[in-house]
Image (cartoon, rainbow over all chains, first blue to last red; front, side):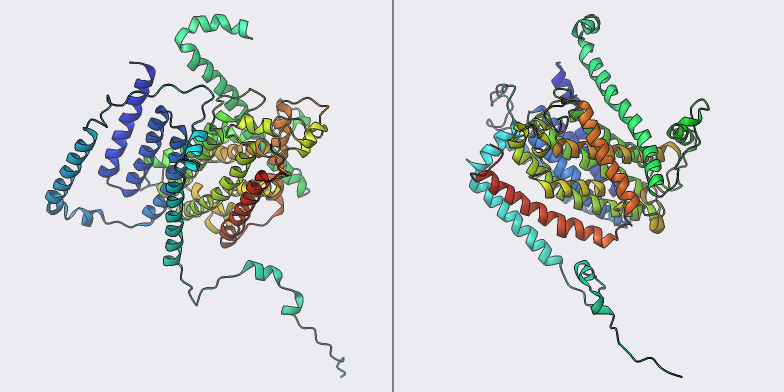
Length: 200
Length: 355
């Protein structure tokens, strides 16, 4: 077993265990943290496949931003674990059926001749000055420019929709406009009145 | 050097690479820890002088009066080392202990790709800039987990503030770095520094005007201020705002566990200062043509940026939380996006200075 294979098995073991703990951990915060660990390890596995841009982007986007907000929400939840577990036996049979179906589908796809590991020839090792990021950028902006632009437009629409759905102006909010506060002049607040001196 | 190392290399065989890498890692981490320790002293001294006080001036080496205060970091470190670590009841014990480690580890791991001089870098990887962004974005977990695991309202409030603040400023920081990588056409930090070494002014012997800070001036300012916010330093230190939430996420920590958070904060400061020096101030390059390049320039530039951190702390009152959010989302992000488009247009125009 060469070094790379050893690293692969090491990372895969952590990945599998962490993924299992995501669904078995009792505390939702622990589950979310196991998910962080599994993302991070998946990044490591991708790195082994020489996909360093995707690996680092996975860590940057999912570990660095998405999961932070995820944890943010999960930590504030007050979950009654007893109530959540009430329906376990009732939902077991449909759950098992769905899981079995998904497993069968995965076998059907991954077991077919195009996806089996032996079918694809191993890619040749790239040259030393090969930059994964540069190649990816070139492909995105030349060959795949339309799908890429489409995906960005969809994301943009999603962002605007999310903001539009959640934004509402409360009338009683005491929001302050810092620009207005800074722009205030003395004349707006204080009025100097010249009065004749009063005599006793 | 090569000839000296050859016998050791033969002796160790396969183990040579990991051993030699470990030696290099220690050669980075140990001086860094020393810098962190003395940065705390520098901070107290400089803020002291700014406020017309002396700062720490008692603890000294071997009773020499002239060195008064110089042993203060060592005394502080020993004090924290010997204190008891109190585990709060009903806290999540494993996470409580893990949190300081998660805070410190990313701030040290990021140093792997920092070039100290031409060719003097632990891991000269292509995607260095991306690596930095990914690793530094993980530092927030230490704070969040600490806040949650402590089972304390103050700590939890601190960690929530920190999560929102770091996510907000990371975007502006990322955009600032995107312009840097656009003009240097590379994600490799050594190449980014080398790219700043040539240009119209550098050929005239005035390298200081060829560095990125001049054409990317708004980005330079945004990056540095966002860096101050990312490290939770004053005036952005609402995360640990003493007057409101005591010490934020660190409130339940004592002894060495607290010290680790402290170390992480100062290590992050040094990291941000060094990154600013590398991205915008020409790294190891000399500002004028007749002086040689070298590591001392990087050190001097980082020290200059670090001084700004301390200066800001001594000067400004703490920001209000909604103002922090406004500055991040409504000021920095639009500014960076506008400058990004502007730089893109500039690079495509015949007036481009980055050919």
